[in-house]
Image (cartoon, rainbow, N blue to C red; front, side, top):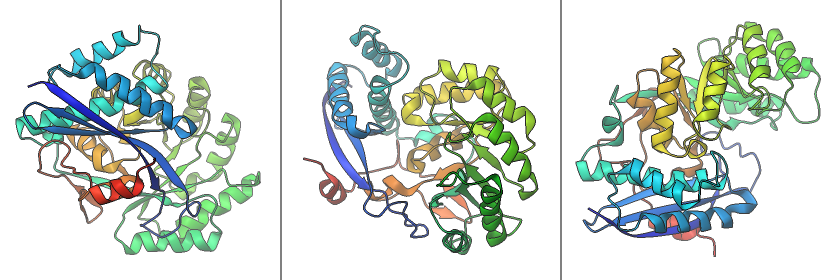
Length: 365
């Protein structure tokens, strides 16, 4: 089997909130690049990448240029293709940036092809530890909501059957620690003591702020505090992790494999969060997960539940899947949620198929 052609497309997907109808910003869209890799056996693999922002045109160009290098290669030889991609840049593009984002789309598509060629869903190919995994609602309990809106959104999520959900602190307007504390207590009161509640800071606190505010809310019983300070301040993160009883999660902003070694060796986090696009695709994601397992650390996903459900289900230390529904409208069908758990698909590969009408509607240019 050989790769014969490819097609990359730039889309702008609405960042709606179908879970509680609490969008962060009306009309906001996320630019993404989709990829179709085609083979001489008739199998097509699909991939996706984003985080280009105003440089999405550059990301699309990088996907095109790297995908061109795969023509004529055996799609089952994923490491060989990765080596060719790296060599094609003259090793000038390191573990971060546009190269990694573009390579991620290709790697995801290759694993989709492999699953289809072997007639197996990805989660089974990668380990098949379990056929359903916990998931948490994400994207509804935004920091820009009023207290009443946050309470209402939280109650809607509970009514929909979610047993885990994530809110945010580092509120707008430079609030006092007391105001930060009030917000997270408002959400906890709305959902009761039995729902697992996570809280994302999105790198907006200094380590001393994280320790101060984090210590004031330990009785709230957060499942984790996420990205409390700058992602590459491994020592600062370690200070926070050592000081607080609440588990600290981080890693979504980290590119490639090697930085995760620094994060893990410095005991920066209790929970390793791996973003599949910034990691570089399925292949490096699994390598990072293996590193975390060696240090007895659980792993969680970041966005794209329709793909990450496979990876979390494949490994024994996968904790939960972030149910961020931004990309779901792209596909004909995505994994179902039953009793707070995502059900793994039995279709081969990713088990996903682009909704052609949605792709046409979201297409840019």
